Image 1 (cartoon, helix red, strand yellow):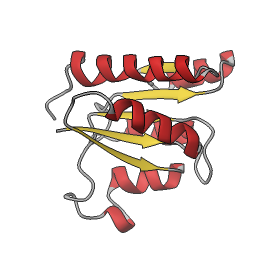
Image 2 (cartoon, rainbow, N blue to C red; image 1 turned 135 degrees about the vertical axis):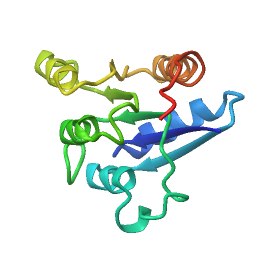
Image 3 (cartoon, rainbow, N blue to C red; image 1 turned 90 degrees about the vertical axis):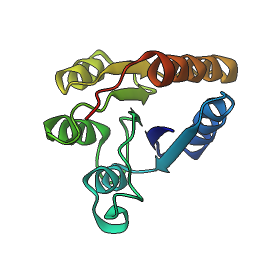
Image 4 (cartoon, rainbow, N blue to C red; image 1 turned 180 degrees about the vertical axis):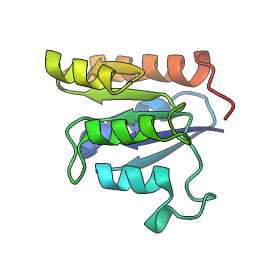
Amino acid sequence: MLRVLLVEDNDDHAELICRTLGEQRWALQIVHVNDGESALDYLHRRGAWVDPDQSPRPHVILLDLRLPRVDGLDVLTSIKQSADLRRIPVVVLTTSSAERDIIHAYDAHANSYLVKPFGFEEFRNLMHDVGVYWLTRNTVSPT
C-alpha cells in the first residue's frame, strides 16, 4: 500500500487532491492534516499519532507552504533535519510562485516544488502527474 501525507489547510484543495489521487488504481492511503503542527505530530509520532500503527511512514509528503500553527518551510526543515524522516520525498505544493519561496524550499531540501494551477482541469492534471511520478515511477528509500 502506498501512503501519502497531505499537509493542506485548504479543504477544497485537499478534497481535489484526494479525489484525483483516489481515481487512480493504486492501493493508496492518504492521511490529511490541515496544519503544520499536526504534520509534525504525525511524523514525529506525538500526541494522537504516538502509535506507529496509526502513523506509518508515508512514501511521499505533499506539503503546502502557507499553513496555520507551523509554517510549511518550518515543517520541511524539521523533516529534512531528522535522520528518521529526511529520506521521505517532500513535494511542496503551493500557490506561491515567488522566487524567494522557491529558493527557500530548495535550500531546505525540498524534493520538488509545484505551483498549484488555478483552473480545475489543470489542477486535476497536475495531481494525476504527481501521482504517476511520485507513487509509481519514483523508487523510495527502503528505510
